Image (cartoon, rainbow, N blue to C red; front, side, top):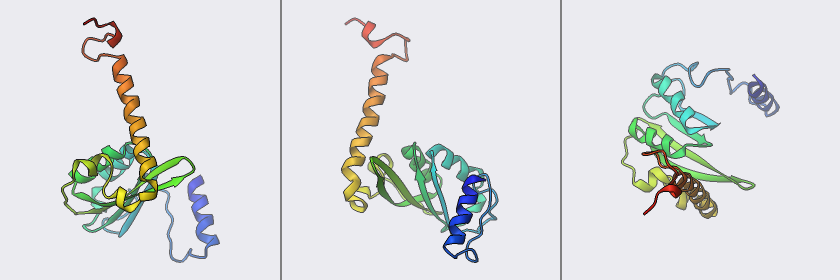
Length: 167
């Protein structure tokens, strides 16, 4: 209810209350099939965004534009979009302070074949957001290095520490 009240304040203070209808909903469940031309889901994890889209696929008519801003699990969200006939059209980066945010633009009913870079890094981010790209790649490298360091410490097959293995 807090974010809804905040949105209501923003809508009213900008004089657009006659143009915007606000609803309190779990994801997109309160939308009727085909009701929205554009759906924005932002500020939550990619896996949660995926579960919101999976829960009500009937809401997405062919051509519905999805603007998605996942805080985590961007790659997993991209994989879902490509595999569920919601092709990624483009991706942008935005920064606020030290943080880099992904903004994915997809379209329901759009089938496209991604490259590995499209899935891992994002479609066209280098071209669309050159001013943020270096910081973004450095962020990805830091995340991958943390994963590598974690895997070096623990062997999932025999449950020993890698440092304990001789030879």
